[in-house]
Image (tube, rainbow, N blue to C red; front, side):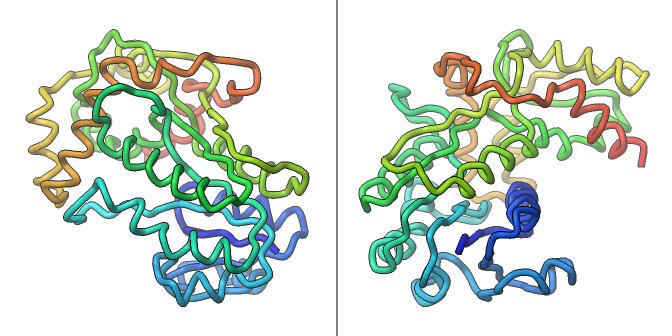
Length: 292
């Protein structure tokens, strides 16, 4: 039995599709089962509720061999530093009490970064707590997602630009959520691994924001430029969009670290290089969203 959390999320939905294609028995934890497609609900066992709830995870992990773990974002959290650890704590007890063999989680690059890194530091603390249970554990460690550009469809479409506090010339890896899901599903379907470790998912190339702007322009057939914004303006935009002061702080600290090279710490290898290029993703995902 494989248990999947966040089965309606950007990554979780894609992981679930791959698990169902394998024919394995799958159980999902979901707050609102109606958000699952009807065909999917017929093929999975549904546990309704939050996977931060000890009673929910106790029911969900009974008889489970493997778990796909994601902490959903909470932009109103009052303490981003403890959000990940407190959310996963009931699950860690259930991993132990039910003898779960393997856990695959969505995390972030940045272990060993010498400064505060906001949400990245919080994710690393969550990984450490999961690993301390003795369960077989793989943390998928990622840079920024290509799919985050979908949040900037409106300015790309209407203003011909996108915004970030990152330096325009800072080259860094990015990855597509489809590739994260493929790596996660492969691990969840493999019953032979054990121990703990990180699995970087780096996409196929390092690009700067200026280079990505050029690619977006070529794919869309119209000029699109990158505009760097000050970190304080980035913070203000987050709060205006509904983020708490704490979450805004966590996001800013993370972006400062990325701008200083956090995502460049992990050496690229054949194993960490995943196939979807930024150009391919723009052509297949971003372009349809902009033209819609």
